[in-house]
Image (cartoon, rainbow, N blue to C red; front, side, top):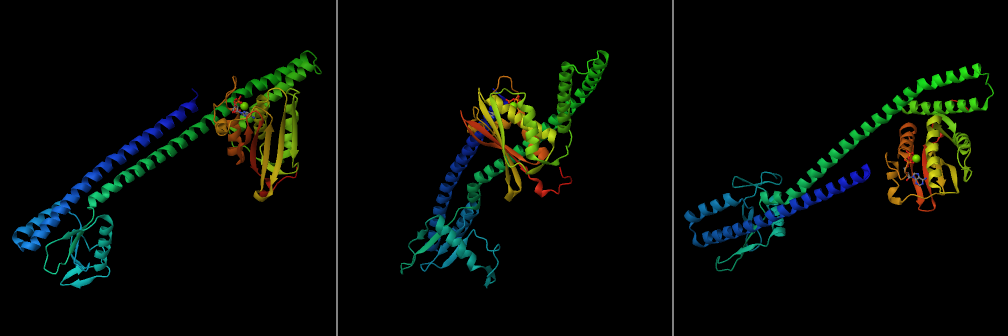
Length: 407
Ligand SMILES: Nc1ncnc2c1ncn2[C@@H]1O[C@H](COP(=O)(O)OP(=O)(O)OP(=O)(O)O)[C@@H](O)[C@H]1O
Ligand SMILES: [Mg+2]
């Protein structure tokens, strides 16, 4: 299993695990909420009965302590209204929190608006219980109640818990992925620097050896020597690319078409005749480029296109200027095997390859060069299995820069 498949499985497993924990926690809290709701209902009924009895019997010696007892135990907020719906008594409510619109009544701080609001809340939560057997006029007093603060908190608890867990997971994910990215950066840059450094010495020796062979065997015009020199030049280009990846490269103003044309001319000679190349579109638009690194990008894209083409095929590079956004699009299209839509992002991950002898590094390097060194973008614009693929590079056009040279 490749590392990305493994990572995906882990992500899936963790997601399922999180959903299971979340659901279990919601269900468990819901079970408690229901249980408490039933208990509070019973307590309320008890409170109503005791109040009723106290009003009928006028025996405050017994009932006042009883009511006190129930109230201290349950802490249920309760409001009693008369037959006209006016509030005549409250319990378990606190008016000190809302001390606007305060009237002084017999030395007690009283806030009618607060109690009316509380009554509205109670009406929404539970039906009232009437107190029966009062007076001959048949007046009906009603007692309302709402959930205790503990029950209300318990109702919100699972959601707060889920939000905290989600926030924690998100923070952990962001921290880990940025740490991983920083680590990857360090490996890329370190490897590139080391490679450039290690190649440097043998290449200088090779150059010296070739000069020596030329003079010793009088082989100035020997075609074999010319080939050797070409290969050494190629090694120098490779070293130069690696050293640029390992440092902050300089970007300069260039005509995009010319840079691509020069590279394609070179690349064509090293590819089978069955693949045709063409460069179309705007041949004037300019962009800020580092040529050795940009060549590497085009080389990776062309190599992949050639690999995707089975036998005969065509590779087109189309250069488009997007004036409104001051951008340049470079579309590299092939008539190869195509990429499944679900793999449009995966192809850029290091290590992703479908080739027997591929490393899966080409596109991830390409993406780094475009994003980190050219502040651009690269993505699969279009692809159809069996028909072909278009990769799009987006670069800032040089219009936004003041060109220093007129090349
Ligand atoms: N033009 C294309 N058409 C179809 N598939 C492509 C194309 N370009 C890339 N791919 C797919 O993306 C994969 C990753 O490409 P990438 O260049 O990163 O690695 P690679 O070519 O497999 O190996 P290497 O490290 O040698 O470049 C390829 O193996 C291939 O499956
Ligand atoms: Mg490749």
